[in-house]
Image (cartoon, rainbow, N blue to C red; front, side):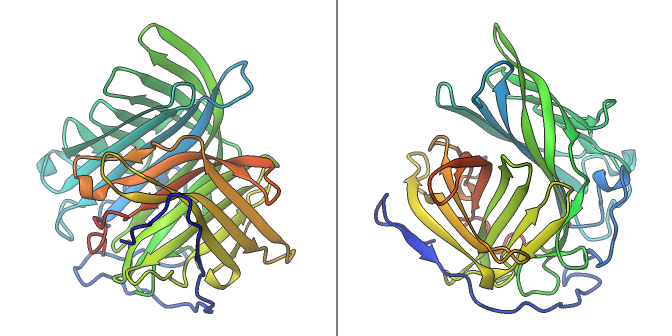
Length: 381
């Protein structure tokens, strides 16, 4: 990890100007897990369910919510469910005979309240069984009392997210655009290792309605959210220590996804990418030679001592128009560090405003900064 000397230092990561070429992935990893195959078309609702043979899988939602009738956002929320497989080939089918044996489920929930500056977050881990399950063939997630997700009768997703202080969100999320499969030939690459690929299926714009409940307070909320579903068996290349990632909702009805894959020597992997998603859900993308990721300022956590580059500028050349796009991500609040049961895996996951080069607010984003404590290195390979 690189420790920053000043909270106001401006550092620039110049992404390597390298043409990326297709590499055929193997059928299985060195450990024996299957590798996602190219040219796989996701079919719903089955795509939303578990893919139990693969080593790791997660379902991820972030969003911004305002109280109905108010102009400004009040909340940012995160909910992630991870499925982690046991030995390769074991317990591929769900059933009572596999109870508590071969699949682990972990849930992360976070809630940023811009009104009072509070950040609720916690992690729960369960073995498969009564307290945790993920359905096959459709979305049906249950991880203890804190997170439940399912297909909604209203054409989207329904959830109840509970926080340990008793507050909760009850939400319905409806896709405003078709699902997107990111990557070349349907595979998102996470480094030069041919096995470091994932199926990466996303709803980039979900319209949200629901309720926030906290003691006697009960308010209707609405807003926008983003959903990722990734399936992999070797999520990071062996020379990578983490990633900086963002999902951006622009006010013009389009979205941007950008990430840089951080190498152990401080460089950025050539497979780092920016994607633009237009009003109809079509995508255009560039790799490392066409954008830069700059950390403009950083924040040091009083809880873990880790320093994160939380104010970011992304400058990218659009592959169709040739225009240079600038996106400045400014945190809505500093203290949005997620510290789970293992402090070495802490990461920063925060709601941000998005500004253009002139400082005009043009959207909102979630920013994820992972691996700054060293806890990811070697764990997802």
